[in-house]
Amino acid sequence: MTKIYKTLQTSKQSFHQKLDRQMAIEEEKENLLLLVKEIRKEHPVISARKLYKMINPVMIGGNAFEKMLMVNGYGVKKQKSYMRTTNSLGVTRFDNLIVGRELTGVNQVYVSDITYYRIGEIFYYLTFITDLYSRKIKGFSVSKTLLTIHTTIPALRMIKTSVENTKIAGCILHSDGGGQYYCKEFLKITKEMEMKNSMGYSVFENPHAERVNGIIKNEYLKHYFPGDYNSLVKETKRAIQNYNNRPHQSLKGLSPNQFEEKIKQNEIMDKMIVSHYRELNHFDLVNKNNVDLGLVKGKINGSSPQALPQPPLTSPNSTLLKDVYEVKMINSKMKINV
Image 1: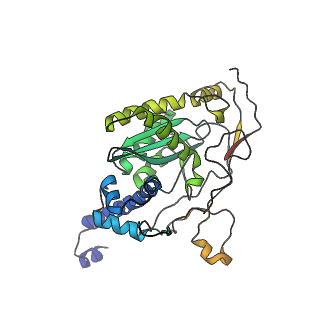
Image 2: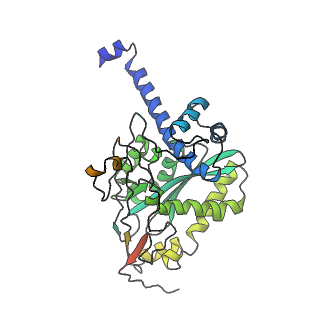
Image 3: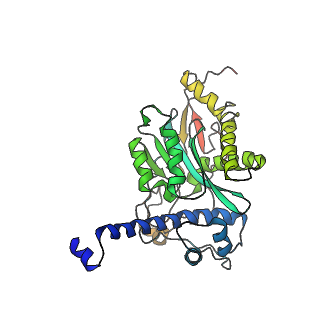
């Protein structure tokens, strides 16, 4: 390696610093594409230049940002949305570990996602980590950037400080393919907590996290009218507290806090079966004869997954009571006096 460094006329330290910076840039690009996709739902024809000013990325310039959008099919003049591929450095994706899994209690599966909240011309970012079994939001962050140190890491550390021995051995943390969920600093914490990382190919494989985003933003924050970053932090805490204490139809009329209290008292012994739905990777379908159209696992350094043209028959706005919904309860043995 020393000879290689000499040939490149660089030192080992500067070489790795440059590599780390390039990895950080590529990570931000992946995160930005997810954000652009969400913004375009509300602003279908907004220009790349305006998007750049609205988002104000940290590590990528305006020209590079516009080029990135054009390459990935986000040019305004294009009528058709093109599939995107991974960056040249490859994208780490974990298997979807929650498909068809049976849950019997809390701290077995957490679901997480990052969304944005706009105040005036400024975008802020909300990260939530929710217990899938009890629907309780257990970790969150409000940030000014999409960097991992400001989004997923603070949310996960919030959980780490609240659990016994700072570990949740075997607990699965499920998310989409956002770079904040496979960043080495984030994975270091999940490893310390003895958690397992899981990813879905699209929003349809992480519907409950998406649902939490919508509830906090549309049913709480938009009615609290936060005017700046500090008030957004305050009102997000308020929204989460109210969310965790309001009745949920999916929890048979109990709030997440009440539901977890009943579990502690051994008054709830329900089993939850997570849907078997899994997204197919459309890049593989180019060569259909050599593709198993059954369940598709996550890939490492593989092509980015694409959403199916139609959503699955399950609903992100599901309860835990009906078999046709995303998550269903079976073998119910509840003893609840309300």
